[in-house]
Image (tube, rainbow, N blue to C red; front, side, top):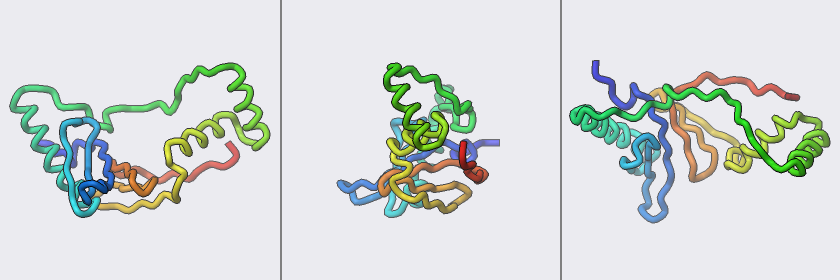
Length: 153
């Protein structure tokens, strides 16, 4: 059975283009593919069609297709090296806030990445979750279960 891009679950990014006055959708696994639409949903649908064509072309040429996002597993752990003075400062901040160093660092990284600049708003379309982190940044991927945040960790 032939798999199309909806079945392959590639990660997609959608941004508003002030210059073109349209939404532009891209899949990082296919840096040479982009699509646009008057709405986020239209741009995503167009990108699915473009990815389908790219996958078909790669398969006809007997070239490998990029791995899907679901094929990549992340442990959620990162080893980070930093100056001892910075480590000390972060530890003091965490202690002052009454949270763990890990929680503080995750919150600071999330804020720096723009994940806390607006209240996340999500809706489903065609089985995909579209989560709005900032006015111009969207992350799109396969549906995932919603987990409750644990407090005090």
